[in-house]
Amino acid sequence: MEGAMRSDDKVCTETGIESSSRGPGCSLRHFACEQNLLSRPDGSAAFLQGDTSVLAGVYGPAEVKVSKEIFNKATLEVILRPKIGLPGVAEKSRERLIRNTCQAVVLGALHPRTSITVVLQVVSDAGSLLACCLNAACMALVDAGVPMRALFCGVTCALDSDGTLVLDPTAKQEKEARAVLTFALDSVDRKLLMSTTKGLYSDAELQQCLAAAQTASQHVFRFYRESLQRRYSKS
Amino acid sequence: MAAGFKTVEPLEYYRRFLKENCRPDGRELGEFRTTTVNIGSISTADGSALVKLGNTTVICGVKAEFAVPPTDAPDKGYVVPNVDLPPLCSSRFRSGPPGEEAQVASQFIADVIENSQIIQKEDLCISSGKLAWVLYCDLICLDYDGNILDACTFALLAALKNVQLPEVRINEETALAEVNLKKKSYLNIRTHPVATSFAVFDDTLLIVDPTGEEEHLATGTLTVVMDEEGRLSCLHKPGGSGLTGAKLQDCMSRAVTRHKEVKKLMDEVIKSMTPK
Image (cartoon, rainbow over all chains, first blue to last red):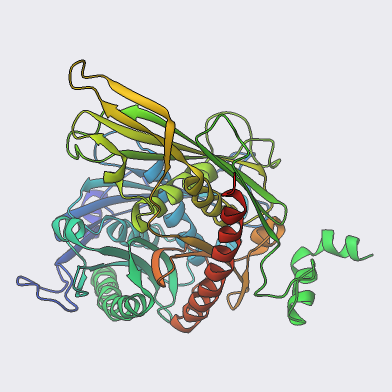
């Protein structure tokens, strides 16, 4: 029975926006999510955006080392492992971004003196990696049942040399773009939780990208809701 | 009595000040600390600068060495930044391998150099495919009192403006480089990126140039790097409370004014240095 329950829990939902011919505008790549696929972590999720795929596992709330414990909150840790090679300074920087984003939404005060660890493994990188990591982390935290104030999602925008906006760029589009902006938005009122950018752009272009990201995030949040509904409606 | 209250309830203590639109050190919410810069103090380095932002002190030294250009970009040189936060600057840092804060700051500076294109890497090339300059920029924090990113960016910019590279010729017969130390030229600095950092309090209030204590109490931070044409090269917001688009606009306008202040200060210092 245990085995049958586990295979039912593995919900492979294949929704998302179909976008075979991506013109300039608000079109995200095809995305998919699979939850509870690993047996050891308390929660796990695999998030696929086009060809980019990230696997996330969450352990927590669990025991924390005395040196790292915080008396009134949970200690959040994020480990990001690249596909090849050892983690370097760039990974440390991304870990800090993801950790601070999770800290803003996770209700750490409900689990003081514990640790919540999010481990992310890059399976394949075909553009918009940080956004995919954020989405995978969010789904894994939901799967683990960690209490959160809101959900969050990551959206990447690329601006090419003549100012056209492309959402969810592929690796090739990112390389040719003049600027690549990644945002993390929360689900309650689409506020900007995290932002990291590469390249030069103007203030007006920033506002334009932010508005486009906010509209695109609606699709992602709707996808979260549908996949969770599908999963829990079976039981 | 105030000191006791501050120890027991630091956030409440702070809120009392914020309600009156000021801060414990007497600054207004949009006011920066006194910025001082000292250029060319390290004689053994090719370029150096010391920046003090209130109590936060960062020194930057730039050394130029020869290197073989990368195979995928044979006409480009390198700029290698490194931010060091030694135990000297604050009790929160231990000796040993660089901690997370130092690594994040190093990555931030590397991104600023890359995105804002301070130097055209092609200017660092001496002979395509064979020889190029590599600039090692070492930023060391001597005193940590918050807002390390602004101080590092300013120190880096000032030090790069101070760098003088000797003229190098490749001798065709021996294929060796001949360095003429008597003839030195300044680097061609194309843009002047200036970083402005903000701290978010209680999800709503934005204050500029947070001190160490303020950073600790804040619910989020935001750093904007802008150049003289109003173009942004970095919007670094590592998590923390959410911001609306309108609040971001206020930050942008403050960043523009800060850029003017910093540019003026730097021009004054450079001008005072030139009659040597």
